[in-house]
Amino acid sequence: MRGSLDGVRVVDLTTSVAGPFATMVLGDLGADVVKIERPGTGDDTRHWGPPTWDGQSCHFNALNRNKRSVTLDLSSPEGIADLRALAATADVLVENLRPGSLERKGLGYEALRADNPRLVYCSITGYGPSGPLRQKPAYDPLMQAFSGLMGMVGAPGSEPARIPVSILDQGSAMWAVIGVLDALRSRERSGSGSHVQTSLLGTALMWQPVQVANYLAAGELPQRLGSGTIGIYPYGAFPTADRDIVIAAGNQRLWVALCEAIGRPELPQDARFASNPARVSERATLGAILSDHLRGEGSDTWLAKLEDAGVPCSPINTLDTVLAHEQVERIGAVPPIPHPQIDGYRAVVTPLADENGPITELRPAPDLGEHTDEVLAEIRGTANGARP
Image (cartoon, rainbow, N blue to C red):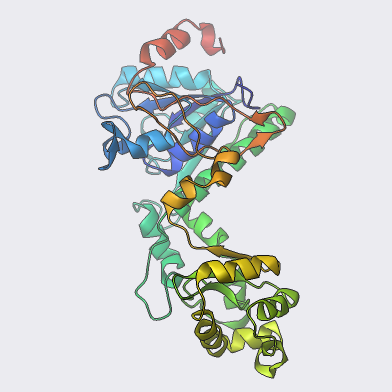
């Protein structure tokens, strides 16, 4: 491994999306991630589908590469003892289980810290580790609803809509990784581990700093703007003769360039549209004028004119178009990964590289319990819980 976490052992006590995504990123950075799974069933995502890929869960494979799988029965004294022995050899433990469940088994932070004071223990929760809702289940769509995100997604007048990716699960995972890296750096100075905590609710609010500021300052609730955004206009999707395109005129210079490129140079002289605050206030009126005009030509024509004028713009692609695009290939975003059970397997990889290329090698997600004997042999052959 080339990643900076080569030599760091991570015990992965996670399931579903948020936790596995976090530990996969740590594995991509070079860590030895030991994924603990239930005997017989394993991670919930092993059973999510269809679709499947050559009989394998797409969800599980997408979220669990660069890991070793160990099955332990954490309802048994033997399984708990093995987990404690493994945690004693670890640098990091990541968990996203119901608050309190690990403490009841003697596997909480304080108990494992007594065995291994250098352990960085990371907990990912839904609503947070305290408060009246701490025990509520918190899947991504529930948190999009609770946090206010779902209420602002969609076109004006439309029904609430979920952001169609697990943005809070995966966003919380990113904060977990940042927290773990910070704790490891702090450990270099102090010699002690710490308990890193993050939550889907905290992540949901962190993704809304502008909306929160606008509400606290002006009492204005976010509105459903479709592809648009608050505070800037024109900035979003517009129709053409054949399909919608996105235009982002993020400053006055780009607004003037946009109007010249589409053959409407008089619009910036109109007092209703002369400044960005004016355009935001007249969003509906200006949107109708631009839409009516842009429908007169096809998307390829407008995109060419806008690009020539230096106005940021894009077609609205479907995923098949994106995956076939040369740009995606050139940055190595979805490379082939040898897989023993899936022919032609490819996967989205952590978008990090240096001047020598990708920072880590890529291994496919493990079979359930594939590394149980290997890992248990490592820890049982270790004296006094020291790292081998």
